[in-house]
Length: 265
Image 1: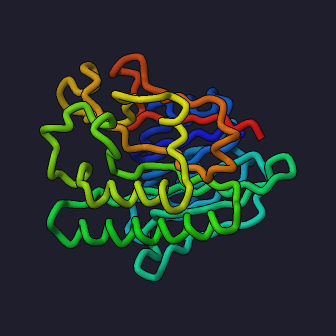
Image 2 (image 1 turned 135 degrees about the horizontal axis):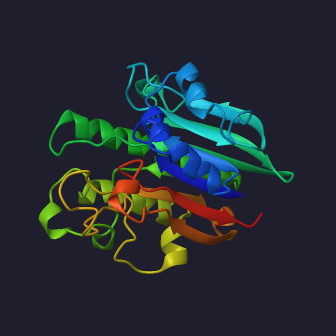
């Protein structure tokens, strides 16, 4: 199972810039998208004529048009789809999980788009509640012994090695100890693995997000905020991971780069 996860920064804009074509050429048989920012018909139109046309699409759109939205696209049989992560987050377009049949094995793939947050505000408190809800879901998967992965844009740099300018970003919403502690618990208490870090080894980077502004991309002044957190049974199957960073600024189709992991099931 080659799983590609990408914050599309708007699937219609990404399609115009070549993003859908790039993902199709990657050979992925499962694609997790974040910030789809489209209704069901608009998503279908963006995928029309691509290798993804005819694939099963599990899509959780936001109740606020043009915002958020997550999806899982797959060539595999889909056994079940869930978008529930508690009443508070109904209609937020931030969580969708699909149970796939991959060669006769059940694999749960979740696409998540975590809030950006804002330190010291209710927006940050909401982000913490969302992370807690995700943690509860991972805890259940762990008890069930699932082959499962939550992948997507977490809007958190877990460690200093995941952020180029970590000293200058202390106290900012994406680099707060309180939210990093949630990821620590996913690992220590629920047995989930940061797959790319395990395969790649220590940082710095590789980063997955760079501002559109200035020379951030050219200078690789980025953040690693896009992840695959897999249950240990699934993580043991991971054999290759890469960040699909564009070779130059002009070839970018999102402010994020996709993260691809090959799971030998």
